Image: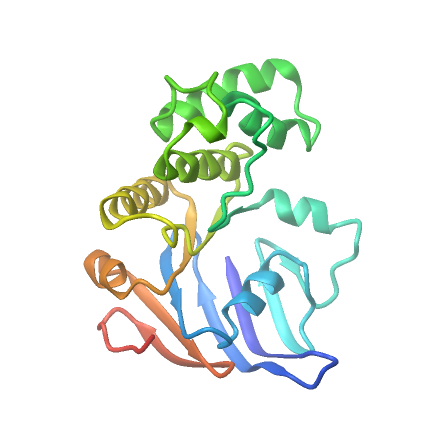
Amino acid sequence: MIAFSDVTKSYSVGTHALRGVSMQIEDGEFAFLVGPSGSGKSTIIKLITGELKPTSGTVHVNGYSLERISKREIPYLRRTVGVVFQDFRLIDSKSVYDNVAFAMRAIGAREREIRERVPYILELVGLENKSRRHPTELSGGEQQRLAIARALVNNPSTIIADEPTGNLDPARSLEIMSLLQEINNLGTTMLVVTHERDLVERFGKRVIAIDEGLVVHDGTDGYYRL
């Protein structure tokens, strides 16, 4: 579960990124986080992943209190949260298989576990026949599927997808969103950050809209602004 209670975040340059944000995302939920550039979305992501601590208020993520988390605990928090980035952040020199396996090796997984888990995840995202290819040999949609596989392979309870369709055409965007919905249907909590109103409205999920560091809408009734 992700829970923000009256969270503020100010930066040393004087920017007040969040100004009293309260929200709760339950285990297994699917929610969109929307808002204009500079509204505070990136700050929320960095608070969830432990990159930042709040100036005031409380942030709880999957059993961790982020306002008082120690450096030693942060890697364990991040094992529970997979992040999918708009720019994919793949390793071009490694194969599709090894890009996914790398995420498991980074947490000390055994090779036997890797050999069992990676093919399953590649099949889940539809890349089982591309395991020996390199990222530069894949289409944009396939690269995003690979990024999702890497985020998913360590079985996180939560996935944050940060503008996952920002570099894709409408057809590929719909494919990626449908894949994220399938993963959510398997029980993974999903928070998708996006500017794409058409996709948000098409899927009819909960929408949390933020503007100037404030939550201005939270619900499924479709009334929000980007």
